[in-house]
Length: 236
View 1 (cartoon, rainbow, N blue to C red):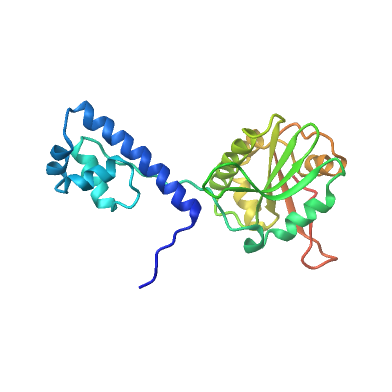
View 2 (view 1 turned 45 degrees about the horizontal axis):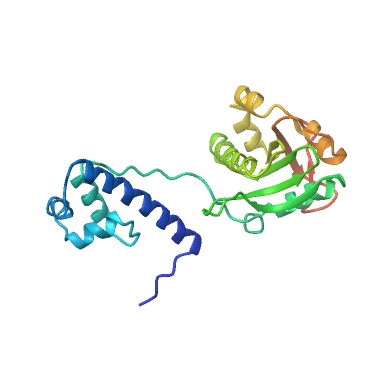
């Protein structure tokens, strides 16, 4: 039988969630003036199992956790949020990242896959640390839709902003394909409001080291003279 060895970050996340749930359930139990044995009878589990739940034991089965939760008049609600993604090397985005880094002005300090300060494995694709502001670039080669990648990028940008005093500008970098253009065009008003800077303005900021001043959308397309390389698209 194979051993179960979850990733350390996943184990930490599970421990944090289990502790939070246990505290909430214990608070509800005390508000109802219920003994652990009372909760156990209602949940049809042993008192020792209830005690494990209340102290935040992440190894308790989900059905047991739901039973104990219901016994104290509560209900668990679970929602998954986009956080970690495949690395640049795994997702084929590395060449685009390398192209952007090669274009950067000497005043910008580039870094790839920068952790954003939480235990859940999120990382910003490419970050340019400038003297006045930080440019945070998220690379999308194939869009499933627009809202989900934009929302995920905003979560990363907000987490990155909490770590720095300088303004962090989000740059959503999208490969210039017919499909991606068609999908983005469906959300033109939203994009113009949320990402006002266009490709030409973004590339000037990267190449000259001048402040961008706002979030933006950068189109990149294959470089025809050099297979595999990337260049910025002139059209916004």
